Image (cartoon, rainbow, N blue to C red):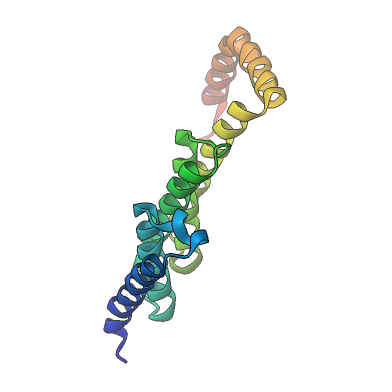
Length: 160
């Protein structure tokens, strides 16, 4: 099989399995008969195609689709799953980091997005972390002029 047919083959196999399992009517598969499952199938197909054919441009959209599918499926199935915008930042950060693994581009934006998502997720779910962040922010609000003075002094004496 030629490499250009891999993506089409993976998509057809995935969609065929999806509809076959839907027709067989397995009780444990009822939760997977939703459109987020289709997102997971398309994302997995893009990831398989990108790694097998070494076409690494499809890693980013593959991770985005797979991550969104998993998240939206989990929101519908698990009542304790967190529905917050920080999950989307984490998915985007992971997509950039997985793409960086093969293409060596997008490391900083991936790390920043992942850290922002984790920071807001932890501040929302962990009260001890949230209280310590509020204490730090209170201190920064009181002493931010000192930071401006220090930056100004640094700029005065910085060598060109």
